[in-house]
Length: 132
Image: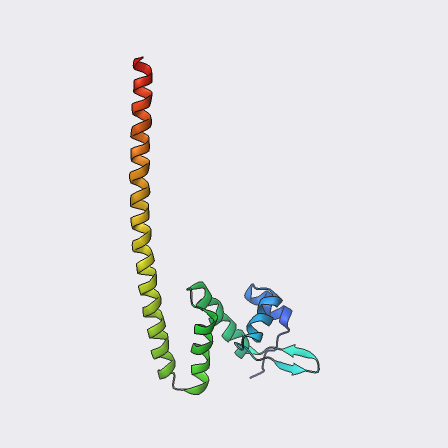
């Protein structure tokens, strides 16, 4: 099977990100491109890792959380430790989102109550103004 290689621009374009973002993730240790002279060469491994990074970011995980998760795969090829870490992280994220959802629901309820009170007050002012 022939290996596929990407330049930073090709990889960035394929994944819908900037070359700067790719270099940022490299700087953070999430990917380790090979070198062909002075040119960075990215393989399918880096591409797959960046897809996981994008997904993790979209789901609200920190760069550090994502790095720890990816590094676990290198340490335990069975994936068991990685899956346990993933499960802990997902459960923690779900809890945080549920807490935010409850706070948001309360805020919306309060705002709707203020809206109702303000509307009633304006209607009362309008009625009193017409009665004069």
